[in-house]
Image 1: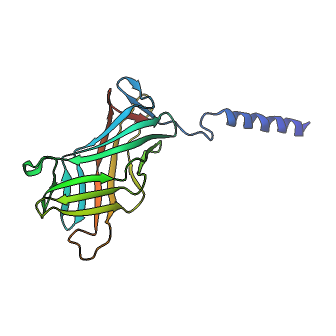
Image 2: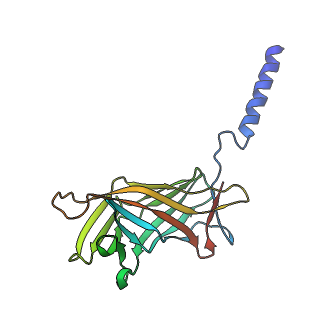
Image 3: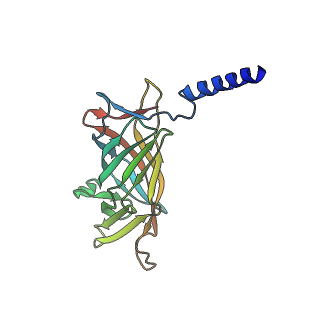
Length: 216
């Protein structure tokens, strides 16, 4: 009789645990805009005004505006996703259309390569940007006889963090990078280019209906 009661109690507890929404289940990450939940297929724009490539010893290339374009592929999961298709960085330093600011080198043209991969947003408040190969950035120093320096991401994924709001109180989706290393490629000890630059900055995400926010 006692064994029968214990079995029923164990079965009841197990059933309750399985039915509990917090047992073994991950909170969904919900992306919203002023119109409501952002549907899959929506075009996203992540824009920055503080994108900086730091080269050490005070050297840096800063872009007035940087825009990452992507299309949302999933929403409301523990990991939401998008596909990135373009990343542009530009300004108008010293009156040169499209040029970013080189702190020690004058106007610099910055172009990206290796995109076409995934952007993954996790309910933990971390994200990754993965190219179809390693992400690349080419800097053309216009005041130095158009010397070109090509850099390749040290890791396949760029990663960073963002704030996740609670139910009914979403937080603006601002993707923050810090210290993301890009190495000179191909390696050339005789090159005038720095051996490494590090990417930092914040990308604020929006869609055609306005700013995008995140909550879990």
